[in-house]
Structure formats: structure tokens, C-alpha cells
Length: 400
Image (tube, rainbow, N blue to C red; front, side):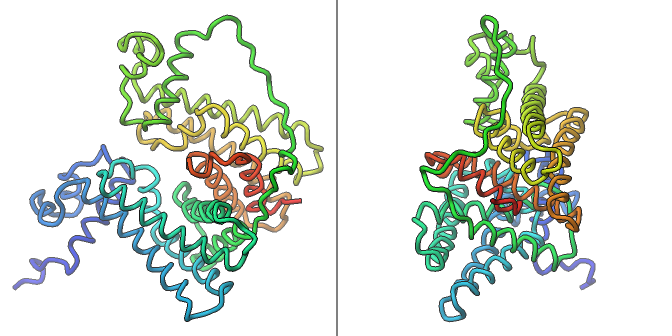
């Protein structure tokens, strides 16, 4: 038989890899079976020999990524191999390596996981919870003073350190990238969470809201849309749902916003305005020569905005492929400008820090904040904002 006619030994994995890249580029809804087939150089029916449908392909990609993490966990936490501190470092290093090697898988879970069928979502939740429980058990052997809930919080934050590679394209030499992620994860796991009676983070002045009369109809639509997107996800909410929540007929929403995409763009602009105004006030009250205190206040201000109205949470939990391309570039610029403020301060606090490393550290801190704020089991903790600020300070290495 001609070698060109032989099927690859692992055609299923090959097809899944092609689909994964297309999902990342265009979003789950922007990719069809025929698109995957064309990119893989096969016919549509050939796809169905391996997968029942597009949803099954996404499930295969995400479950394979989860299995990689489980394998790393099982290998590192084997009690016969080494002492607890060595096992923890080995685990973190293994997870960091997988994050660097398969950063697109983490991106897919972040943006497209909601499109899985209910059974696959339940399986991922169950297995992820079991894996985090194993991490927390080992952490408590090292730090017996931690409660189960506190250990779980630190493990969730650690997972976000590794997941942060999915939100940016900054890269380093592989060995150094793994070392840096491992170091950041260790900073998280060594955090001393504040006691309930500890002082709240340094107060950051805010601009008082001035409202004359009732908010406009456009503002009501925008506010209700943000809340509905937060609760149900972007794809599950219709313009009719938004109109009903705002107390107007569905078609009337189109007088203010021509599409859901334009609504999401407006939410993104409002989120950007909130963090930039908060950052401006945080930096204005800091001494010009005290970059460490300025960075602390900047982190504090972000937590306050993030735990306030839902715009910021919505903006960071919806895949930006839903936003029109012309608006996407503008919102990306706003985000870059904001991150740049953090990076410049971090470089001033830690002279000699490579700019790429500073960006990776800042994205890790922001991802911890964004992820934990929308993880209900930890965001409902009574002193969550103070704890979140403490975690950010630790990752940035600016704790007092």
C-alpha cells in the first residue's frame, strides 16, 4: 500500500489537535465539522468515524488535558517517592510544564468549557475537585495550621497561576518559564491568610456616584445585561431576556444596542473605565518615589472593582471572539495599557526583573483575582476581598 494512503497511527488525537486550534482562533460556535475536516485534510464523514459531533471533540480535548494534570498529580504525590516538600515542588513543576506545553487547552477550558454536554461538565468538575482535594491534603501535611477551606482556597489560586498562561502570549525559554510558574505557585502556597480581625486593605479613594433621578433606559439595559451574562453566560442570554429584565419589550433593546456583541463591547468599555479610574486614584495618593506602596494600592483597587458591580467579571469570563473585530482591538488596547501600569511598577520594585517575566507575574496575579472572584465556593468567604488582596501581594512579592 502506498504510504500516502496510510492513516496516521493516532488520527483521533490529530483531529482533536486541529479542532483545538480552530476553536481557539474562532470560538466554538465559529467552527463547523467541515472546517475541521478541511483543516485536517480529510472529509466530513472521516471526522464522524472518530467523534459523534463537534461537542465530543471539545470534550476529548479538555478531558485529555485534565488527564495530563491527573497523571502529574498521581506521579508527584506517590507517598513512597519522597518527603512532602519535595513532592509539592515536583507536583508544581510537573503542572507548570504541562501548562507551558499545552497552554491552548487551558484557554479552551476558560472560554469554551460551557459548551460541553452536561455529563462531560459534571465529569470535569468531579475530577477537578478530586484532584484539588488531593493537593489540599498534601498541603495540610506541610502546613497543618490550615483549615480544609483555607487549603482549598490556596490550591484554587495555585491552579489559576498555571491557567494564567492561557490569557496572554508572553513566552520565555521553556525551562525558565516552568521555573517561574513553579516559584509563583510556591508563593501562593506559602501565603499566611489574614485573620478575620485583621485590618482591611489600605483604603483607596473612590469617586462617589452621583445619580440625578432614575438611570436612563440605556443604563438599565446595560446593567441588566451584565448581570444576566454573569449568571447564565453570554450565549444563553437573548435580547428578549435582557429587555424583560430591564422592563422593556425585547425589540426596544435594539434602539440602544444593535446586537449582543455591541452590548458586550459597552460592558468592556465600562469595565475599563472603572479599573482605570480606580488605578488613577490609587496611584495619585501614593508617594511618587514609593513604587511598592503604589503597586500595593493598585492591586487593592483592582480587588475592590472586581468584587463590586459585575461588569469586570463578565468581561473576563466571555470569549472576546463574540466582540466585533474593530471593537476588540480597542478593548485589547485598554487592557494592555492597564497591565502596563502594573508591569512598570513591578519592574521598579524589583530592579533587574526581565520585562517578559514581569508580564507573566502580573498576568498570574490578575488571573488569580479574576478566577477566584467567579468561583462561588471561595468568593462567598466572609473575608474574601482581604484574602484576595493578600494573595495578589504575595504573587507580586510586595507583602509587608
